[in-house]
Image (cartoon, rainbow, N blue to C red):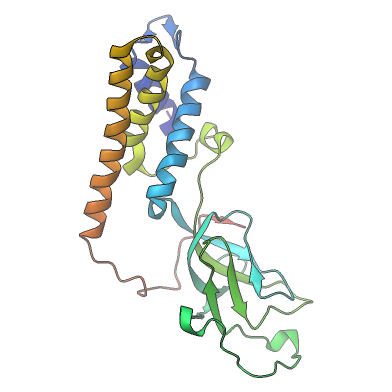
Length: 230
């Protein structure tokens, strides 16, 4: 049983809507999946760190601006890599103060001799700049750490999401489901809001626990397991 199937069943049971032979009667499985996806999107805004994974992207040739289509938020660039994610060498991360620093006139070089120097991640998080620009005429790849949310199709096909979000997402789904009946019932409306509050409380507790652990983001390795290509 996939995580999605396990969650939809558990949520349906919590809603007293999983009687033998009458499963998902009041709330269909598709509805509950929508609630789960909705909860993941809300959680993403608070805990992007839980959605981070290494991914190989092909750099846009001839441009310093790189905006991977499959990365909603980029936290770091490990370095220039092979197509399968083996890092060839690292890149220096620019600080805000030197993102406009001029390195002198750039002269054309043989694409085979091109070597990336540094990068800067835009405040939006979904775009980064690399200098010098990747050369035209060859395929260049980089290994980045980016955050993505699994799509509905990916979840249905068996993709998992962070286990830390299982409990919060259940609370969000219960909130959304009960709000349907809560429009005309003040008691159910109150219960629904309690589930919503619990959702945010769980995220807050997890965030506080995360902050209590010191992590060195510069402690990188070239042997990074790649989750997917971009």
